[in-house]
Each structure stands twice: as C-alpha cells, then as structure tokens.
Picture (cartoon, helix red, strand yellow):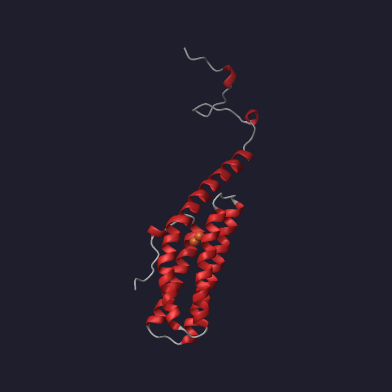
Length: 170
Ligand SMILES: [Fe+2]
Ligand SMILES: [Fe+2]
C-alpha cells in the first residue's frame, strides 16, 4: 500500500491547517508502520486513538475558522467531515474489538480520503480564508489611519507641501 506523505501538492496555504494536515498524515504513517510490523494490539490502539484525536480536533478547528469567516460552503464541508468521521468510527470500533484488519482498512480509507478532501474541499476553504484575512487586514489598516486632514503633506524631497496651492498641469 502507498504510504501517506505530506507534500506541497496537498497544501491549502493556510499555515495552521497545513501543519495539522502534516500531523495527521504522520499519524496515519505511524499507524501503518505499526500494522506492517505486526506491532502489539495495544500499540495499534494507542496510535489509532492518537490519530482520531488529531482528526477530531482538526475538523473542529476548520469548522470554527469557516464559521468565524462566514464561509458559504460551511454546511457542505461539514457534511464531508461528518461522513468521514462516521466511517472512521466504524473502523475504530472494530479495532477496539481486536480486529487489526480494520486498522489496515482504516489506513487505506484515509490514504485515499485525506488527499482528496485536502485537494478540493480544504483548498476551497483555504482560498476563502486567505481572502477573508486579507480583507480584515485592510479594514484594520484603514481603521488605524489618520484622517486625510491630519496628514502632513510632503513632496518627493521631503519638504512641506500644500496640495491646495500646487501648480496646475499645463
Ligand atoms: Fe476539511
Ligand atoms: Fe483538513
């Protein structure tokens, strides 16, 4: 089976989201390695729990960011998270019952689902969040700017300059 490795081809260009994706990809790879080496069930369970907690925290984080930015496709995106969580939950239940084959199926499922979701749904969200942050920065920047009449006008040489008294172009 192909091993999941994060690369810039999976980037959504929102630093905290990309960092969490890297963490999840690594958690999947660690679980895959434990399964491949026939590691003890306790280890498989521990790595599965760690992976699930990364995924649950990550979905909640993305949903908080989308809600705060009033993202129009929040509902659609959340539905994708819910469907994946439900599927993952089914594998976890079987792993808890000692079925390590479910561990392999979980890794296979996430190796396909994660890059696909990051490449479309998360990338769309990332583009929206970047634009939203840029527009918030402009508003903050403008709000902190002095009114026009409180500005000191200077010419290119740095000398005081009265725009009202400027020469008209001929
Ligand atoms: Fe997502
Ligand atoms: Fe994501």
